[in-house]
Image: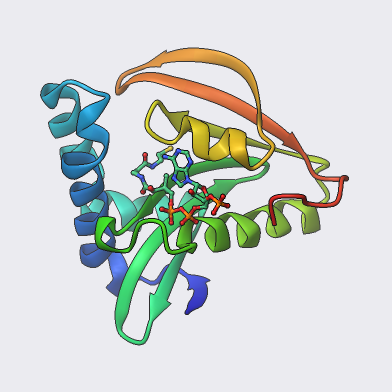
Length: 154
Ligand SMILES: CC(C)(COP(=O)(O)OP(=O)(O)OC[C@H]1O[C@@H](n2cnc3c(N)ncnc32)[C@H](O)[C@@H]1OP(=O)(O)O)[C@@H](O)C(=O)NCCC(=O)NCCS
């Protein structure tokens, strides 16, 4: 599996992964109406637009795309893994890659905006709660992790 920069041609497949995550996984923590608004928000056109403002990376196995995460400076957003491949370490590899990018950019901490669904994933990686925020897409947790320590969770 390869972690590489998002390309315009990835937009449809990544939008589909995001829609599937939202409808199959995040639906257990958020109302259906919120889920559908998020699905409409993260369409292919929006992803191409976001790619100009943020660094978006994808996890790829051959031609198949398996997940994505993005970053703006020290802030990490939009982490989604194909539900058929959840629990296979793809999220961990995406985060390892992005945290390294944040470290290389000179920041000594990384910040994540986490859904209720992914909150424990970040805590397990050593992220510490900073605050909760009410967004247009419901409750999110803001967490931070120092980058100057050796990674325990790897
Ligand atoms: C959260 C998510 C990105 C995790 O990706 P993943 O590829 O399934 O995670 P990994 O297989 O790399 O798991 C790494 C570790 O985190 C744990 N983990 C994964 N998802 C978790 C969760 N939701 N809660 C708690 N722990 C979790 C795994 O058990 C594993 O633990 P280990 O190191 O002891 O083996 C993925 O499940 C997902 O896309 N969820 C829905 C979308 C979402 O909520 N995205 C976040 C928006 S901020």
